Image (cartoon, rainbow, N blue to C red):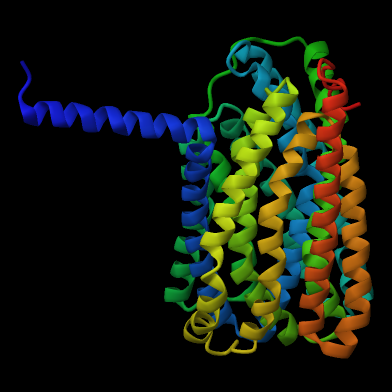
Length: 449
């Protein structure tokens, strides 16, 4: 007969297993694992920004911020849109037909390499004319060329993350997610200690870590289980492109929206203003990472839904998780100002900008993960149209409010555009759930159509 101590231990162990199982069923465990990686990623990235912003000064840091904003937009042409397409198509086969899932990823990698190489070459050639014509600063050409190379590195790095996501290996995802900024912080720390922290050196590190991290992640991926004929790979590549084209367009538009404010500040104001805005944006960025973590964690689950009851239950589950996240994020509003004054003493003006920017990501975290229902129902073209409205609204607001109110006007323009975007997304999700009620037995449309 077991002792009282042993019985207590076994009861505790059973309770722990049940708690973990409940978290796994709700999707919260996957989100927590992704957010663990994102938390380390954010902390390391924040440390990198502290080193760079204080080491370079506002003028050079503003130039860096503009170049990185351009790189972020360009990376979306061969970035997370194609990654999510691969995950959406492969996740349903990961357990039952792993060879087919791997074939989708192999084909997707070839597609990403082709697209990113073309974008990199075009961006490199256009760097000079864009620096002179769009920003009136010929010195920006060099940083923009670094941004062009970063397109290829980002495509490779994102592909490895997508592999872990599709297999729901979120512990591997969390570790690999943080590798990039860990390498970056180590390199920047070395440059700072050597007294070699220059703009070109920071750009080289920011781009180079993508390639190094890709090499670090490769050994952790499963080996291919079949030698697919060229025809099968070509077919899988077409499927990735067919489904991914709308996600690419949607993500490209959202990336453009998220950086159009900074790019227009760089055009209409000064590099110093861009630097102040970039510091405030970096404080709001973790909120968007929380939102994206929910999307990453839930997509493989949502891709397997079939009935209306499952869709409704998953929608409620996602919203409950997002509401809890939003409440947990509220203290950031009060903590950001003293943190900015402590860590960025030369950027005190960023605190007021952040207080406005904070509102946009907070609304987004409540609504955006719900558009996974549209992904699962292959309605991604709708999101592209919604994000086009987002970009136009933000650009129009910036054109009017930046000349009148400076960086604060840019912040209010981004927030107003996000509110409009979230209302449209919410309306589309409600319409899709109503459509499911009218067609309870109808399967989703073929992927990409």
